[in-house]
Image (tube, rainbow, N blue to C red; front, side):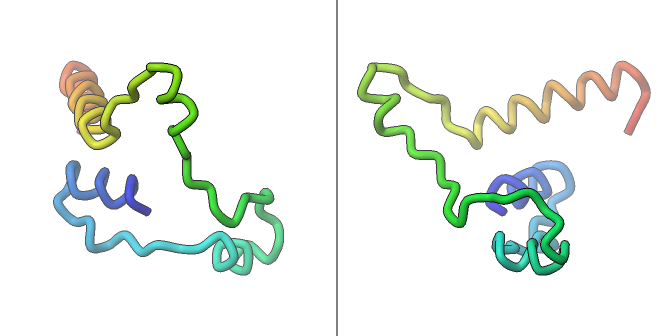
Length: 79
């Protein structure tokens, strides 16, 4: 929900409309027809960072991506 909330905030300023849903709640909604997902899917980067690889901050990467996408929409005349 953090990423969805950030996208809605950056694009429309309405992150308050995003409601977090647990995997169990989603599966109940889909009546057991959703793909199996781990109960906790937090991406741990500790082992990767021990190799010396430093990841970008996801918020700034998301902002850059959305700016890039907006430029493409502007070029095509799409909102």
